[in-house]
Image (cartoon, rainbow, N blue to C red; front, side, top):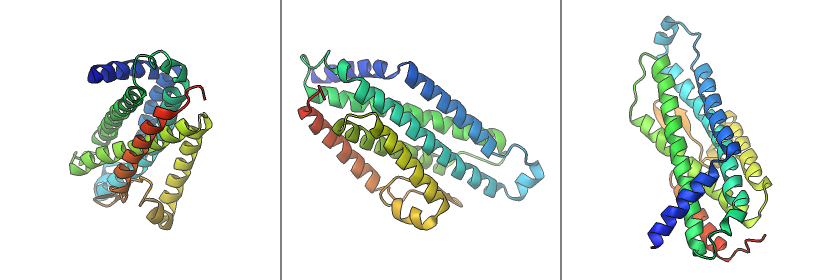
Length: 243
């Protein structure tokens, strides 16, 4: 019974999440990401220039594309958090009398994770399709899979933090502030190695260095993410839904 309730609620919250605004943000972000990735791939280079330094072109493409992906992911996450946590308050009252609050909170987490996983797959496909189309010597390898994993972990972290803080302080500005802070951290980290060295140990930042993919918070990110979601579930269980 518990499992069926959570599945049904997750399905309802998933449908609720894809409102007109979130669909527009989701679709527009993917279109813009694709456009930026194509531009970053440097379609104006000649084949001779590419062959002379193909690894450098690959590294530059993935490094800048990942920065673009992380920025747009922040926008998408903020949009879905506002819908799922703030706008869904009135939606919650339809089920609160027949379901435990824990079911509702877990269902929201499952809904969010499903959305993030789908988004990660879309981005993985776009990232590699553009690379395969533009670079004759590029091949999908183990690093491509690691990028997929790190993007997903990064989004889980940011979404968990945003979900928790937005539940604690029921304000539309919380996801926007987290989005803004995330963008600033990533831009500063991409320009100043010293800042990246400090922030990347806690805040999820993906970087490319030659053939290596650097994700210094590979331990902190999943641990903190789990903590965010656990605290969210317990707080939602005692929260006054009228707030």
